[in-house]
View 1 (tube, rainbow, N blue to C red):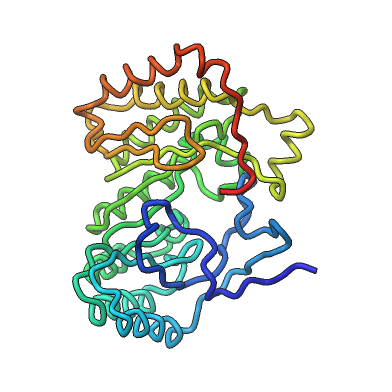
View 2: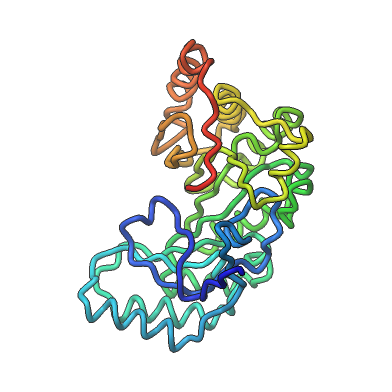
Length: 302
């Protein structure tokens, strides 16, 4: 028997939102086909179907946090991709957060490129004006070939368009880059395409994540069959170095390695200023004999 998690129960959030007020807006993911993702696909005999929560339930949650004096905290609108919900619905939620909760420094949510592209520019501006500060979007790879293989449901050009439209609306953009997503076979293509897309968008932030294959994903079977070859820790660091090295001179993004999956914790508030130091430090890790012999983590829960 598989237990169905209700949409009011939050399954995942970004590490940076660990101390934020978490408000469930949607449950599950309206795409849920990515071959590397098992978040809503029944790990530990649980699953969560896609659903948009009733507006009155979300507003009651906001009232509850306000009554319990959760003022001054960032607010994360939770769910796999809340931007899939109607814009009017989201505007009401964001405005209510700003009305009921005092001194909120940031309102954020996950976003999927497909959902952003379905919204008009005017709708994105509405979200910004209501008080949505930043969205977290999974770029994963800038290679259209890898995105197609992984069934991401979009391509590099769509990612560029979605990213630019978010930024042009006045909303900050944090992109996730997944090291190792092309495996050993497509590693160079992954690096080249990802550096190009990041250069085209110049996001507010981009964050590195390292691919870990979960048992409940299609990619797990590919790995077990030998059809997909995972990168070693040092190969993941090489990908990160080469992505940074291939960025255009226009890129001024903040960069973070803020996840348990990563093999380094480097960060910068402006990669344009710190690129040489970033690369030099990564080179020192890559050439460290201890790291060369480091086994993969391959976490099955995070």
